[in-house]
Image (cartoon, rainbow, N blue to C red):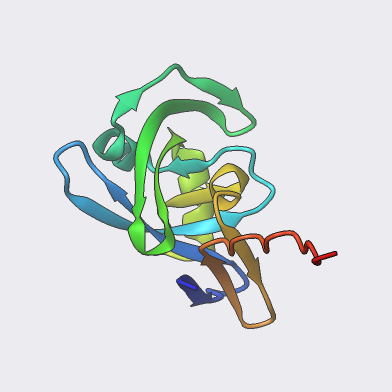
Length: 140
């Protein structure tokens, strides 16, 4: 089962996720994982502008205005090639960067739920969901 495992950076769970631009180039971003975030992604605004396939209206949050748009998550090795909703916001990106200087934003619950995710004392992981077992129908 394909998966990505990352040791914690400080005390933070994180993922390196690739995104494809409209011109087909792929950018891999180190994102702090936040299972409590209702936003799929919140990135630095410059990255949001680079990666967005289409911008949408802003959304207000406790971090201020979030510039919305659709991004192409491009991780075929994990079975994740999806358009996902994301946002650009300096405040969220700065909070992530304070946890680790390589973090450029946050990946939240809507994106994490596209796969199986979890962690233990040493690392955080995301993997291709396992197929459900077929129902057991014993012959009569």
